[in-house]
Image (tube, rainbow, N blue to C red):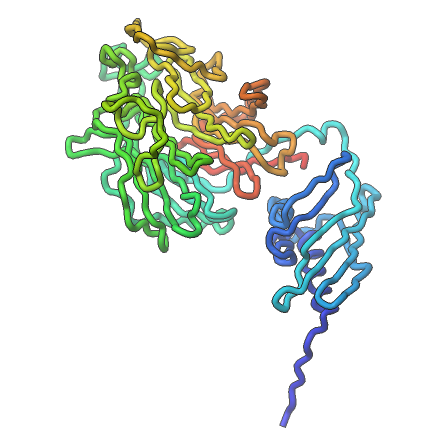
Length: 512
């Protein structure tokens, strides 16, 4: 009879295993190995070259190694030099060498035995900043395609760092794994989605379409727009989608629905908002959505007129009885908050602001928590605004651009208009903007990233006291139509390109 002796690992061996797991992850660029060695959401303190502390979570630290090639040594040999254990707490010291710079420092780690496993619960380092040449201190953004062959993607929502939902304007709603590239079409979507069409504008008289489109094949908007997760998605699994919906007469409008995402299938569909009336014309739907700091759902709806002269005497964006050309604020279940602005008993329900032409992008300022939004002009007139309850943003009675025709709106008595905080001197067609927050571009933290459809522009803007104080255009030599900019939960910047072969692009810092 053979007797097998099972060797129970000592605490010293278990601590050593956790430390080696951390070392292998940092030496060979395995973010999962790094993350597993830490207790979740562990806080660590690093250098930043100043007198102030620089800290991040263990997940953020592991993410720093995600963009490097896995399994390739990164020339930072490390070794354990000291372990000291006191019951269920341990202290460890790791020596790290960076031969290229002649730099040696030590990581000091605190470990705790939790449910039989030793995990790192704190990290501090004696490292000093690695000397860099002046040009290395300047961010150098580089684009890398992560996913391609998307059908005019419009928006994206992160379920987690690797798993995302992507709404294709001319396709469907996909669940995509950014590592494996697997994509799954979400089932259970509404059937009343309107589709974009292409029109040969040469068949129409001049003046019916803008000069730039005359004689060309023009594609007009419809389809799926914003996909958005509930703030409590982990618990309730609610997903919100805005899209162009059509009726039996093939007229269309902006619609918002909510469903529960279960096994890549939307169930319990509920219509939250319909911007009636249904009208003909596949343009200026709006469709931007965001949850505010108050957990209310904000929705933009476009004016739906291709030309300003198509407005009645009281323009639709100025008429509180008309749902078009407005911003709405509703509860997550579609009901109306009691503290919305009072536009009178005849006003449409949920009204929050008026005077909107074609707004798509909404984002929240990281410090003030104000909602900023982008706005499309006609000839010029592209704007950035801060959303205010009861505000009138002026369209079409005032504009920072010019009209496409000789339109002269009739003055509205006692109207007060809110000016934009910024407008461009060229056409940008700004779309899904975001404020940047991450470690890839530390110099950009708090900056506004604004993509555009026109000529493929991408802007980085510094803000101060609700004002734009500087604006830099990125990737001037490599323009592409961009529909959305978004920052992942771990601070990575992504872009969605508006193309038939649409792409999800990761922007990283080559100087990092």
